[in-house]
Image (cartoon, rainbow, N blue to C red):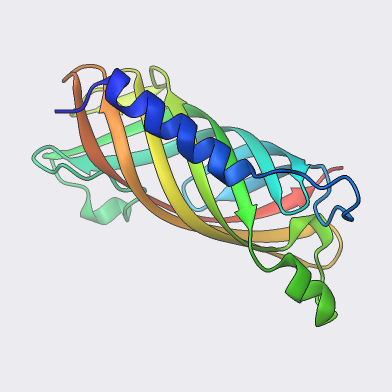
Length: 196
């Protein structure tokens, strides 16, 4: 079983490796932006701040729907209403996260005359998130939990303001009620509107 101390040092090392050093002479490809969006199973807002030429920090707050089977060690997002069974736990919870993103194809997109507007590109990320007590819970718990999820993601624009984004990752979530770390799948599909 993992504990908080076992994850703290490796997490810091990974965060510093992701950040890299910013070159003051290098043109910044990323821009600050604030977006509001609809995700496949929630709504939220995020604010992305560049910290290097191709690295940013993304702060996000959202309200999400989620579910898990009682015996499963994996958590998933969303399900069709007609397939909900009595052994399925469901929650509607607020979620807050901080994510480090390392974009890997921005320079290539610029060379190929593809848009990088609103940070359109592909990235690898490491997300640290917290989900406090939920607004709704059925057949389960909605207690505080923490997660650390490495992922691959992408953002693309439709026009100047509309942004499509997707992310897929697998990490660990600490459940406060069971006092255990469990596997956690993160799948995200969303449409955002760039506010700034």
